[in-house]
Length: 582
Image (tube, rainbow, N blue to C red; front, side, top):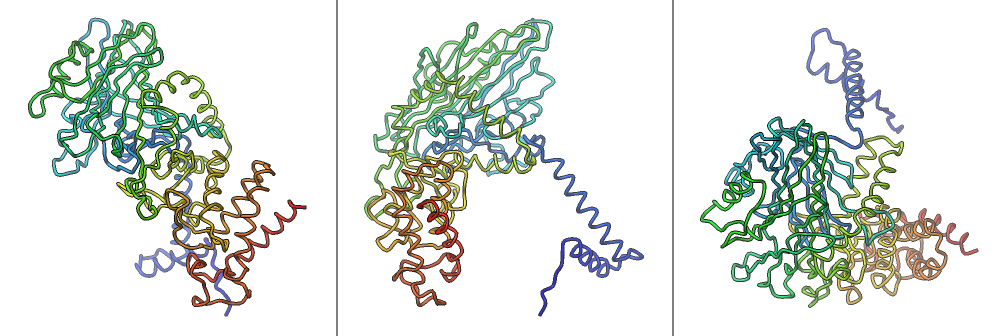
């Protein structure tokens, strides 16, 4: 029977004809319907293509669901929302969708000449619908005035927000990023987010401006007995700010660690701080802070007693027509990653073993990480800007650039991490509070190429996992890696995953030209390839197989007979590798 051949144009014509007949739309013929419908579809395609420019701009209701990842690759992240709010604090070695401290927001105070000063929460207005059992609730003080609107421009790794408010006597915008420098995984893997507010004075008079960041110490658990949080003021040549910790947590607690709210200061910048808001009854502590800040644009003397919401305030005088930067740095350090905590499967008895974080081996605490970023910020930003500029100026369509850059942000989410030994690992994705589907799953991760091109050391790490202990004596690559590595294997040999790892080994070599590396790994690659035809492998007789013919370590992903999946791949790879060997 001949296959029905139906191209897009013919399909639309037939579909529109059916719709026209079914609805009996008067004198509107099927041909007319098809042409009109097809024209509307094509015009819609054009409009969509015209709308997706790069970098993309969002405003109005589009701002509601944005969460832009700020953080280093494989080092955790904090989400920057479309309104300028901080959301999705995922710095604690596992997903944490929807979580943020009860109070974590910036505020701006501005006075032009002798005019009455204006104070606002430095976010655009909260957007309906208002969700949850308490509506807007009390967290982050929704009753305080915010700015009228904002325009969010996203082109990873940079986010830019232009705030708008007629009542504010100055113009304010935010540029936020974390260093992202291809082929430099260490400088790209800093547990630090940089938020630089830039304020411009359009008035004829001098403007005095303050920006204060309030953050509730996030280093805590639900156990009140261990809640002994402390915020300590620190200052060095590189940074000034608050170091937040909790001595009440045991040293091996997964939440034990530290968080930093810091700022970079320049000549003429006045800094003030509170280690905590005034401790009040019920919900009046935010109002006590607001009364002080909105009056003077400073924190004043440290209140006693105080709570755990630290404040760091920068104040500067801006000449007419000039601009001033207010740079804040957020840093974190949580070294106690365990398989059980993050959702990664472990060999029996190893669930609570600390596998750690690589960034925690580089920096003794969050303050040291922030100091490193502050000391090297010019170089880190210049290199990140160079990458972003090259990406932006490429000639591929805007929608392709938008999709590609957005997906790169996955490297900075809890889907990816580096253990203390520096090895790179990835879940298939992230659930709300746990990683989803552990193990650098070969039949998922073999489809990505970002690591090979941008961070080759991550790709090499994935290859060490696949062709290392994960491969058994028969040559089968077990498709999920357990951690700690080297003690037990998980799963079976998935055909697409196994062959995908072989293709990746070829790609890694083609990109690097590293013959020494390939010679070292080649015996294992060859063994993995031979698993397709050796006894005990997939297809020793090269005959059609059934499910009963498959050994325990050679089940195919997707249920396809193995030889159907590997044959063409094997031929291509053999030819390529034999050519190289000669």
